[in-house]
Image (cartoon, rainbow, N blue to C red; front, side, top):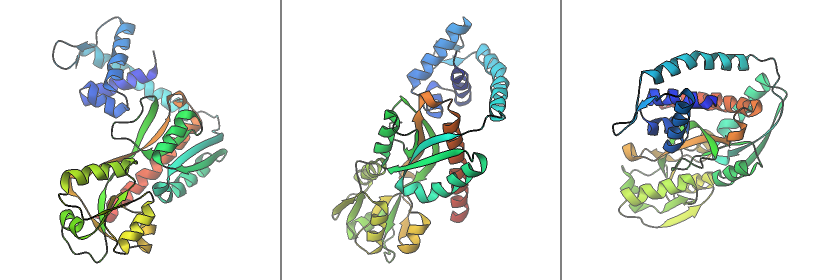
Length: 299
């Protein structure tokens, strides 16, 4: 029985449904259901009451989870305290828009904790980096996770959620997105990217009138053009360095704003790879710090 099955059971008990647990574990609901059936076959007893619309965990499910929880924590502690050095080479892709945010903290953390681990960085778009991970050309990548969750053949670890915003020329005074789109051309981010596709969906649903459109695949170039008064765009909040050079007005889109999930994608066969796990931990700490600083700056 795979250890991840017990983690999935814990997620089901925490979230209440197979579907919610699937989202937490980056699995499909059918994969969660299959894991629970395999666990029931292993134990020889049912863990869920399936007489209703949704499977409900019974007492045994909670007893199994309680019995395994401390054991799993102890295993993780033993693994973390192992004297084996993390070393070797890890090939990691990071999308261009996040490199200024991620790379300094990521490299600093790895040099302090794992000085014998060499990081080889690759740049590219989310789609190409994801394909490279799947093909074994790189070991991991920080990418925009597709709205449909992404390939179930890969492991997706959510790292950061970013709300897309409307950026407008610094001198624009219009108070809402509709007015800005009537006054300025729409500078699209490449619609074949996750961010671009989300922006298109938002505009098609909420903007009744568009003056004109341009399309580019470089976020810094789009910010520069918006700064110059050539249009408006819906993108991730630009990084501080870009905003210093090209100030723009940032307009939040409210409750309907598209939200992008940035995840570290790896192959499931590397779930027990200590080097990949070290990079994942460093990535999580770096982006956690960035998110806390962003929240503090907003207030």
